[in-house]
Length: 369
Image 1 (cartoon, rainbow, N blue to C red):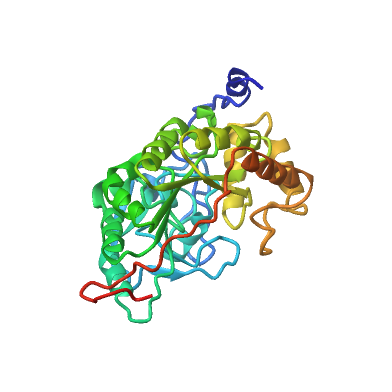
Image 2 (image 1 turned 90 degrees about the horizontal axis):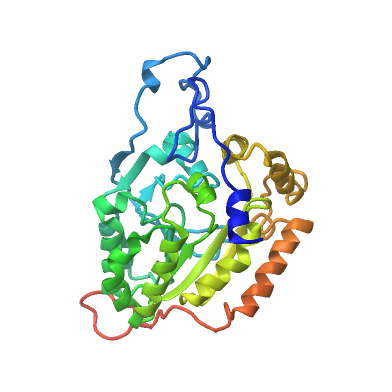
């Protein structure tokens, strides 16, 4: 399919901008589903109602917090990381499929619009990280920066917590992996280049589609695919090992783009890849269903049923090893594509790992390992 035909085929259908069915452009979720942990909460019973509590605008709120810990041990065996750290909770990028939406309910908010509008800023994150790395039993296991929400989301432009955390890791020679959808990572090119020389950092850029009409509604506040390729090119040229995350692959929307994404990423310096298959757990099921039928009414039924076919008749699967890949004919075809084009473009061909041997605590002499 030519690029123009793809653009025409996946163009978002215009939405009626009526009082009852207005669409919040620039946001992924269009409503706040009920928080499963809250017994009492406000809700809108009638579409024509005007309630004071919901008259707040759609501007993002930054809520400063001071947690007690910042590094989390990851218990899930199929996510490819042992530890993660996230300077922000909630994410203004607004990706409609994001699994982190459900986590926002633990903070007392909704997984819907709250997730995109109420961003928790962990002001003491750099200090907590330093304290954690100073623990005498810490063994320099690589930590994922952005294991939950994007560490380079718009909040980073104001608070620069990710920058400060990278500076701490660079000081300790602590290995770090990064996953982002935002070109703001280029602002930290200097420290990333230093870490790259020591082989203590690698970064992945998430690319799900080259179709701008699709990206604008599916990931409304992320940077364009063109900009993401620029990130890969610039950082790989600076000596940072770069990869791509193609996730999630959604049958009927973007799974056909896998080859193009891999080739473009390879041509710009990426050397490794990963992907996930769409799964809709918790409140994300409601949010994605609403989003899908509002934006793609002509193919919503088809896409929804393809997702169901890939999860044994459901849209989610909790089984380790299966939930991230799906099963059945469609999921198998996606996996075959991934392997075929990964091999064709030389992705994941090298034996490589972050260097833990350089880790040292400030003031200590010699290597710890």
